[in-house]
Length: 112
Length: 111
Image (cartoon, rainbow over the protein chains, first blue to last red):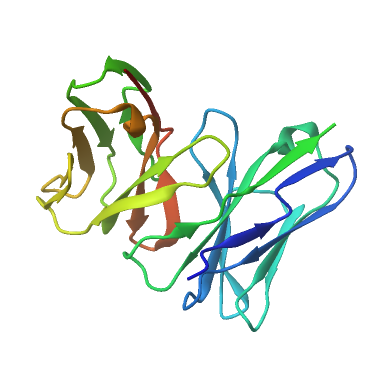
């Protein structure tokens, strides 16, 4: 049973560029959440997608946007990259609140 | 704003010792989840507790949810080097769909 799949695993971008990260949820899961984890910190919630719509958003600027497709997979887009956007970006899928989330291994984004 | 405070932030112990990690908040959560994360990997769910006062055991790990559903603890008995990792608590619930994470406890178990 495949878990959550994220691509790419590593990415290096230049300031001002745009990036797209991809996530395939665990089979049977219909909800996808994105988190940003800086070094030495816990993950911070970016947003959650359910039924192809953004259901909730964390405290992140509009440069961060996303999408969920009919097959429940999701993309995270970040425009006008800043050095401070360098982090591990985690995708988590779930089926029902309170039953826990399955996380992918993340995409390590480095902005130079 | 919901916040989760984890303590201690760092813990280095010898194999065989016991330890407890604490997770505290002023907010009530409908569930509290514990994850373990290894370098370069995503967090892996260890347990979910949903009922105030609930205690769950997973081999040498014991998890407790406070009666008021605002705090939780993780106790490890006879720690082993394989327990080394970042332990994260996360709360869910209320009007939020998101997980609110603590900053984590970095545990190192020395052989």
